Every structure is written in C-alpha cells, then in structure tokens.
Image (cartoon, one colour):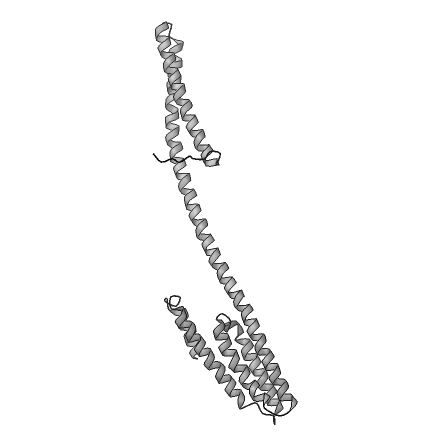
Length: 231
C-alpha cells in the first residue's frame, strides 16, 4: 500500500523530477521492506516436513520477484533491495534443512536471484535507452520546429523583398519605354544624344537590379558565401 501511495504521489507532484533522489531513496526503502516481509513470511511456510508447501513457497517467491522485475528495474538499488531478501532469506532457511529437496529448492532460488539481477540490469538499460531516445526525439522536434519557423520568416522576408524589387524594376523599364518612344520622334541630334544617355543609365539601373536579384538567389542556393570582415 505504501509503495502504491508513493507511486501516486510521484506522478501527482510537479516537483518530482527536481527531488528525484528523495523519491528514489523512498522507493528503495519501501522495496526493501516489501522484500524482507516476503522473505520472512516464507520462513513460516518453508519446512522439510512439508515439501509440497516448500515448493509452493518457492514458486510464490519466483512469481512475486518476476512480477516486480519491470517495476523495480527502473531503479537498480530498489530491484536489488527487493529481490535479495525475498529470495535469499527462504533459500538460507532451506539450505540448513535436511534432505535433498530443500537444498535443491535453495539452489534454484539462488540461481533465480542471480538471473533476476542480470535481467534487471538488461531491463534497466532498455528503459534508459528508451528515455534517452524519447529525449532525443523531443529535441529533434524542437530543432525542426525552430528551423521551420526560420524558413517561414525567410520566405516572408523574401516575399517582401520581391514585392519591393518588382516596384523598383518597373521604374527603369517604364523609363526605358518612355525614352524609346521619345527617340522615335526625335530628329534633333543633341536631344537624341541626351535621350540615349538617359536610356543607357536606365538600362544600367535595370541591370544592377537584376544582378542584385541574381546574387541573392545565389546566396539562397549556397553558390556564394559571404566574406565577413570587420570594418
């Protein structure tokens, strides 16, 4: 009942992670008390005069330890604190009793204790691996979300730039059209020369704007790298 209460409190409280060691020690103490209670209770059942009851007690201990393996292997000290008294106390009682059956059951319990510790460590590594994988996935999701937001901001900035650039591009194109029309109706050499110079400046302005757009496109594509210098 106490272990169940601690589990419920751990899941309910928001400060459980920050006070992890306190909860871990509490879990270890309750696991120890539970293991000792099981081991001591088995002492009353283990008797060489009733071999059937001894076999039943051993099977009962094996079942309890196996059932608690997934629960206690998340914290190895708690798993050892529960498994050791629950299995070795009745095993010690069986060893000192006469006959081959109690000794056999005791050996089986000792072997089962060793296997439980080994399996508990394997289960612990699996649990830790799953937790680390979940944390990595969570971090990856955060990174992808951040990159997505950056990409959206870049697209918005690019859209605003293209909207402004399209307005700037239309101005020299419009000027070129007006100057071409002026050239068609101009026979005066001086005026024609002045118009041609204005037309050349408009073409240069348009060319510079187009080159700027191409440079930005190359930067986005990674074809150009910025050369940062301190000024």
